[in-house]
Length: 311
Image 1 (cartoon, rainbow, N blue to C red):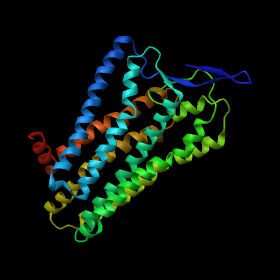
Image 2 (tube, one colour):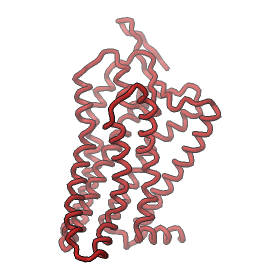
Image 3 (tube, rainbow, N blue to C red):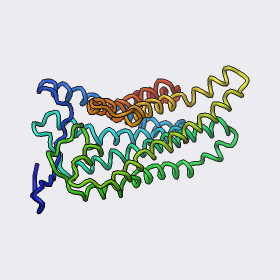
Image 4 (tube, rainbow, N blue to C red):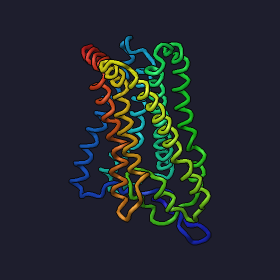
């Protein structure tokens, strides 16, 4: 890690040390094997969903097109952290360059924001399908679906661009040690040479919005869905309606449940370990489980995957 001396005799760091999971060498190797397997399974699971939607004509509908894009997003979301984490397991220094740290910071938060937006438009799609079934084909057109997908990516990647650029222009001093397996804003801002409350306030204000706004939209959509489903006279009809959104609700619960534990619980003196575990869950475990949830609970997807694997 390079250190340069500034005129005020403080040391400005140009690289960081990601502590990750400080286990003995044998433990690091075991974690490397474990997370390598998780990473490969995540790529295979989400890649299979993309291929199934691509090659099965029956799945060329807005719901499955959104799901394929969501799986594509999950591949990149897990790729923003796991490869560097795997390299750190085998590294003695656990160094990450200044530019590498901020690139990871940007992509991790941008992809996370994009995931929130995707979950919101997937809930909107289920709302239209259940509450407006007769008008669904004319409302959720291919053009609208494409525009919603593009909007998710654009807003997700623009939301944190300016704040992260501003933070990257600040000087960082001290040990350069980040007690995490990724470049997290809290430890990063703690390493700045001069505290800038305005920047911290702006970032702390912007950060929750991509979580809160889509979450409220999802809850509103499913409140309307629930009201519509309860009006269905037959139990079989209600079960069928709920089954179309059960997988999405499970994914929303996994992602937002862990995120709310992370950002909604009060801080404590022993928060570093808990932060790593919770971040690991929503950034690594959830992308692994999503393909399982969608393939097990959706008959059309299950058939498409069976057809794909028989090719």
